[in-house]
Length: 152
Image (cartoon, rainbow, N blue to C red; front, top):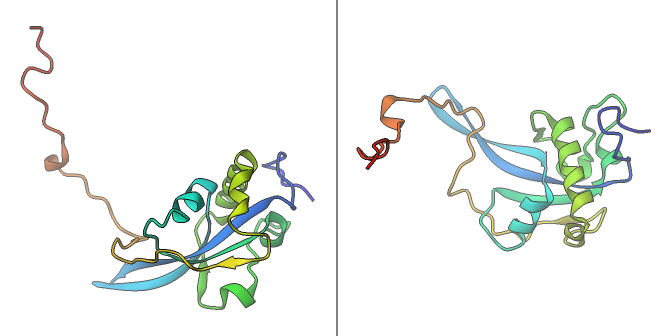
């Protein structure tokens, strides 16, 4: 099996999936949800340098073990459980993350295939709001110095 939109990848290619604690605003309330999402190599390396993260678990596996031929996620229930949701654009994000491990294979040394890791610097201080609306106002404009466009 190969991936039509990613001929450079094989089902045996390395990927890390994480369980992130995110939040959704609904009816004035903020609800916590757990989301399974691919972790790119740069993010994994940063997390292992003990920066605060919303990830509570990371699982290393092969790309073919989480993406089936119909381009849908197949997460192992024994690791992710039933309360974990799959992130949006899971297929495309998985392909992109797998490519990062091909270009930086040294990042694969953090977690062996089939293993999980959970000793992160876990923090929910900066909440990841999944459905936040960004409303741009005139106050958001950067004020330039009065001499910026003048020839002196």
